[in-house]
Length: 430
Image (cartoon, rainbow, N blue to C red; front, side, top):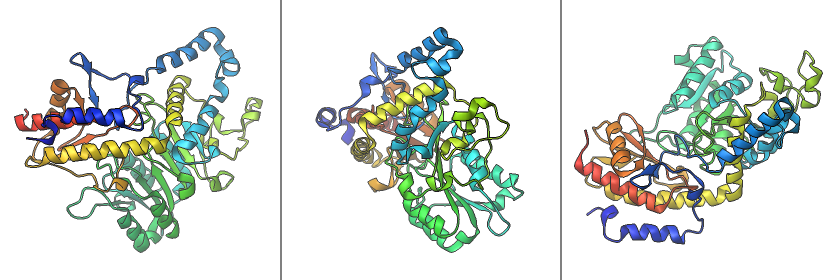
């Protein structure tokens, strides 16, 4: 009998929830319903749940718009003109940066491009871009298009590092070794700090140091890292980074993204940038000058005034992360993921499935990827959701991603997911 179905195991999961040092904030989120109760949601690495407080927060901005109209820019309860500054401090704490090193703006891939304008400066001798072979497709498209824009063949200029034979995750030491041997040709390193497919957490500090030692600029895609793992971008010395806010940060589909530029670059007037009205010094913005008045902060990479309704959702999310703190969330994430790993090991034993995420807790975020051999996992995820109320994410053809997000996932959710997966694997699926 599977561990997930042993008598008393559900009770044990409930006891773990009751005794955990960090109480869940599940009640503060809208959980999809199932069978008169709530679903077990493990797809927060794709789209986080909606905070219950968001409707009222958006209503405040709508009220200001209705009652103040254009004067809301300066007279609203959170004036729109300077609204993005409210996010600077909590966003910096989230990623381990100085406040002036971060700005919330645009979408993730737009920010990647804006930052590559500044930090991908290829030459014939040094023009390659180093990414992981399992990079998210938009990252691949972005770097290939940047190489082509500069006149280089993307098939030659983009180097895709692969995991070792028989492994699903790229090891940090292999990235460091590649840079030590071939880094003289690398203009830019751009890796996902947490890989979307395997859940692998790379060593940001070690890889950044290796990239700099080789003479390359180093940027990080934090789409699956921000709000998931503790980050120390400033101390690690990363040149730049970008992240989205609709996964672990629960700010809504397509919500605004974030960007980081290390302070050593902020006053560098030689860096090329694309500019817009919000790139200039706000103190002189309404003088309507024809040329930008530079600011020595990440705001210099902004283009336009931000969409306030989207920014309100990000601000609310950042407030929640500030209230709990990433150290406490990461500690609970490790507890949840370890418990889920033990359950899934029992479920996978004797069945055509195995965990492909690294086993070492320090090498992964809040995600376990399970490869189900020889089957399309799309119908499997549909049955898990429809029949058992368990949301997991499918990466076709054969990988399930389960992400116990510590703000709202519970040990009982982990038990439900393992029990449901065991039942569906035993029963087969169409």
